[in-house]
Image (cartoon, rainbow, N blue to C red; front, side, top):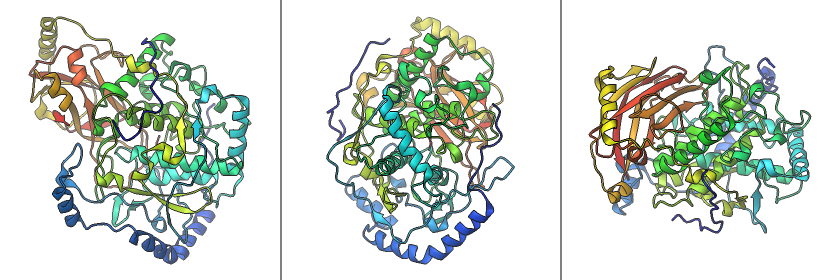
Length: 586
Ligand code: C2O
């Protein structure tokens, strides 16, 4: 198991109003101009600080580094070890630019933080008591009042204070809507989604948000709540965020149709579900639990499946998203944002997501999934050891408004950061999808029948997904033993995905299926799903979707087959797919 000791044993229970665009208070040009000038004024001194700090962190040059690593026998995970470059470095705040939207009407959104004279390398402050992040739907009135007070104080700070709520919200915009280029690689965008940076970036982000709130109310034990959407009791927006419109926790830019008692759909896609009646409660809960099982258990058997693809200095972003990042993380963003707002503000678009206090509660649970995953059985369910991941850095302002540099390696153990999550049972742990359980003969016949319906040849890729297509994909290995399966996960790779970044995009993937009926079935392998965000990369960025299918193939009785039929079903947005293949990965 991973370094995290299992001091919190897992509990397993039975299976079982049209508004216009939100106001952009800081988007007036006067303020923007002032901030730009401030950036320029401070750039010299800030650079000095940054050089001084980085000299304490010597880094090997590319070639040296690779030789050293190979000499030590250290190889990368889940990808070509020879591809090792350098870790993604913290952005240069003095070079922060405008993060415009990509929907045609350019809204000048200034997400840039103030610059600072000094950058401090983060050291965890001493604490006497672990902060316990509570389940949002179970907290009492006192807790809600305390959080409301803390957030009110944060919202009352001047916009120029990096700890103010508007600045906190903009942290997300800057790191996600291409306000930064990668340090040392002008023109190459820095992006913290769709790669292995997703979990550590958001963990650090929440850490400082929580510490600032605690400082504002003079309570260093204050811990933010988490939205327990993986549990039937937590499958609606937590009421502390919705029931009191005068609360600091309330946000007007939320979906009117997904307010409680609406039961969230962890597999939601916008165009498919608009206007449709909700599914019966029991069915929705069961589907959600199966989705959780797939994303945390059967579909997350390797580090790259769980964390997402590697992302190194100088490389284009958006290599491939991790399982939970895809679903349910993205569908929940879309569900919460106001569908009547042009860009889905707030939660439905990365640039504005941090403006909704519910964002931090949602991400609390995403962060908790990282802690939980490492405690699940499976020898590969532990943290990545690739130095390019461990040494990647970000910048945040801390509770004392000091600019600090943090490393991925510094956030792997939440206890070292002073917090843990309240323990609740995990009903999805035993929620395997319904197995097809049909005779081998019947499966063969079904596939043969399907084949005559007109398969799309692999040679036809790249294909714009306008309607569902089915392709026959060869399996390089068949009839693998249990030991072989434990050693190597069979992975379905949908590669060369090019998609419209200005809208929410979703397509579903089925294996050996006839009716594409949804997430509760074993044939449902997963989805590609995105939140609108901008990219300045003028060249195309191709993304991969990787789906672990070892257990799925057992469930559908395809273990010994030479091929599988893969069906891609478009749900929303414009997508082109470059190809489909099967690989095996440690
Ligand atoms: Cu940075 Cu939920 O996204």
